[in-house]
Structures are given as structure tokens and as C-alpha cells.
Image (cartoon, rainbow, N blue to C red; front, top):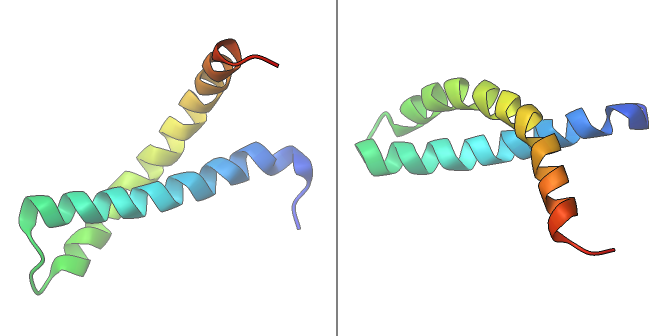
Length: 74
């Protein structure tokens, strides 16, 4: 088990994992179709997409949190 201090990074890890799997799969299917080597092409797209999604998530999470806080009332 991890300490609660790692919550934000673990949360972003799982969100970026799920989103990168779905997005790379859909974009691969739309751009190249679902053929015999679809899963290989999807995996290769995901290998690039996941680290980028993880980095982007860590950059944009604090910005999104501040923006959401400013748009909502307590």
C-alpha cells in the first residue's frame, strides 16, 4: 500500500492509463481501420500516448483544479 501523499500521482497514473488506452484505440481504428494487425498498431500508438498523457496530466491537473475551484461555490 502507498502513503496518501502519493494519491495525486497515482490518481493521474490511472486516469492517464485509461484515457490513453481508449483514445489511442479509437484514433488508431479511425485512422487505419481494424485489420489483422490492429492490436499491434494500437499498442504502438499507446506506447507513445501513455507517457505523454501522464506528463500532460501532471501539468494540467493543478491548473484544472484551480480553474474548477474558481468556477464552483462552496
